[in-house]
Image (cartoon, rainbow, N blue to C red; front, side, top):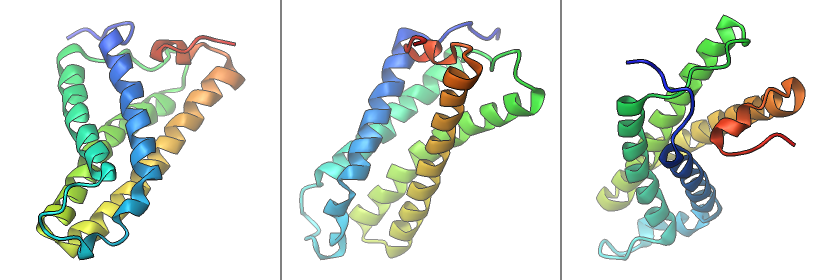
Length: 156
């Protein structure tokens, strides 16, 4: 399948919606501090609702990426940077799916090991997202190659 030259509007919209939801879930993570003490039939806190929403939106994003594809990394990037970019994108997909998945196991099954895994995955997701953001800002402000325009952001 040939790679598209740009992301679709749906891909861009889902990207930014997931970003906002992940930030919101992170900011609300203190809601889950006493999750073990919540009754088994307690309603899911907003943190969990945002997480489950991320989970299902990421499944949709994954399906869309597998069906439609994604633009290749910039051709001027060295081969190693292109490989790192590709691996980072797939890692973000995996982490943004596995993190809420593990959180739901922890909450619904009261499984402490899943909660520990959720914490580890959350940290890896945030670090990977930070690296992804740093690379995008490097392209935008150091290389000035307009890479962020592919995600709906224009050059300054």
